[in-house]
Image (cartoon, rainbow, N blue to C red; front, side, top):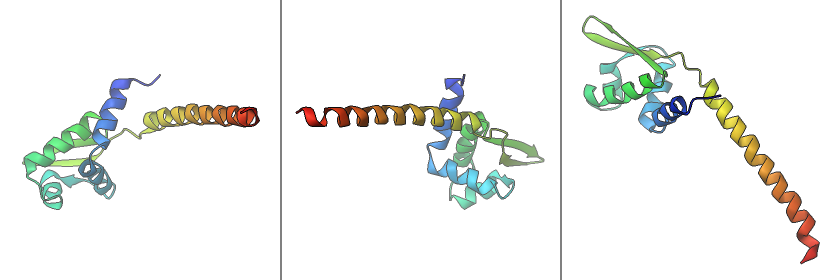
Length: 110
């Protein structure tokens, strides 16, 4: 069973286009907070707030080397979230199939 708190943290982190962009950028390799801030025309403090939410969801890991904080992709492969989405998709598709069957059965009775 998936813990909703982990789902909540992941979906909250993914809800922002800047955070999704950061994840996309980190696919190419680690980047410093300063690099990300420049890329998104934000202050280091602003980008750090985005990175913190990604880190809480396990999507990003940060590491300080000297005076520079680097970000890289985390270990959350989004499998739990994908399973949750698939399960709900199957439930909705089942409901739609039952609705279609009901409509077909009742089509000629009105």
